[in-house]
Image 1 (cartoon, rainbow, N blue to C red):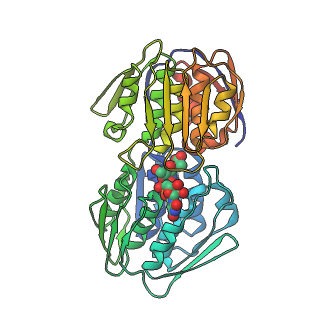
Image 2: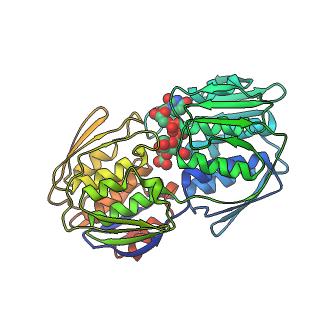
Image 3: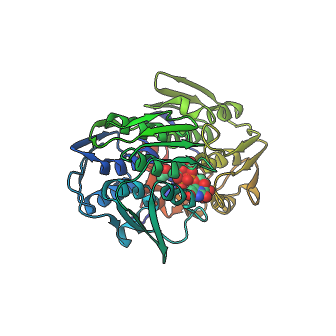
Amino acid sequence: MTGKLIVNGRKKLSGQTDIQGAKNSVLPILSATLLTGGENVIHCCPQISDVYSALRILRYLGGSANLEGHTAVIKCDCITRSEIPENLMREMRSTIVFLGAMLARTGQARICLPGGCELGPRPIDLHLNALRKMGVSIDERYGCISCRVRDRLRGAKISLPFPSVGATENILLSAVLADGTTIITNAAREPEISDLCDYLTACGANIYGAGEGTIVIDGVDKLSGCVHTVIPDRIAAVTFLAAAAVTGGKLVLNGTVSSHLDAVIPLFEEAGCRVIAENGKIYIRSPERLRAFKSVRTMPYPGFPTDAQAVMMSVACVAEGTTVFVENIFESRYRHVEELTRMGANIRVANRVAVTEGVERLFGANVTALELRGAAALVVAALAAEGKTEIEGINFLERGYENLEVALSELGADIKKV
Ligand code: EPZ
């Protein structure tokens, strides 16, 4: 969907909102349903375009997949295909998460990686090296990847040079039905990894150490579908906290796991916000003027999440003082800087470092979103800005946020989609 958002800023937000299910947890879990017999019922499934794309892929492969409200009902008893066609590739960036599952289910997989990605080069060398160790032969040609395993995936000892989230997920999905034991060292520790392992364990997998640096998987012969509730989206939660902070508002976020935000909440407190987290809710009350938090360095979990860097930059832009950002995870994740500058932000970028000098006020402008989290940053900045902001490219926003503008307008923002 194309379209744009019109925002008239400087309205204090107040009230409460429910946080959606985690995009980066539900996508690997939907892929993992390929490995199961019988019915899967996945609750707290966010209504976002990446989920619709993943369900279309499951149906294309031969599964039945329906979303009723926030519950996905999926059956993959008869999978007839093991490749993802061009048109479905284009819809969703992270189709790579289907690779391991298709391989484990059918013994082969073919995907054509989409060209230039909005976050700089997104190599998949860690995925492919791991799969080769598990007995997969891989042919990469013309941007397409064809994988085949002779008889059955075999367990292997895999040490990841970098705790890649996607590579950890692909190894997990290849290992749960493999012959023998797989040990992943330097595995990603994100909550979404633990959620995927919880789902797989409920389906009958033998996984030990999820959420730690070393994960051990003893392959089994079959997995059965189960009922699973997806964890809350920690990045959506940060986005609402940021919206409250820049408008001097006060919000209650329902259905959160505040421990997933241990690296982020202290920054809001440093900025002068009062934040209280208790039994699944996060309360935030913001001052009239924010003080700048000193620095943000993105790191693998449990460090500061790279997906929250852009929205926190919008907060820093209107806080009093200087903030230094260091983006250690992705090559080019400062594409929102130019657009924020058009709104009057004072930001200097040199490679992985961005320095923001808070300004008294941002001003509405016509800006364009270029990727998902940058789009969220522009929405947060528009809520803070004097006057009207028009944001183009909201299809990026809809990939990861469920009706963000509806939730924000219910909290008092003057924001609408046209
Ligand atoms: C997942 O991407 C998330 N996407 C990203 O969220 C998130 O930013 C990222 O993890 C880090 O937390 C999904 O879960 C669908 P990585 P992923 O493999 O798996 C390099 C969002 O906004 N790398 O941990 O792609 C890679 O280039 C999205 O919701 C290799 O070099 O992240 C990057 O610089 C954006 N070779 C770094 O590692 C590889 O084989 C982190 O990548 C794989 C990755």
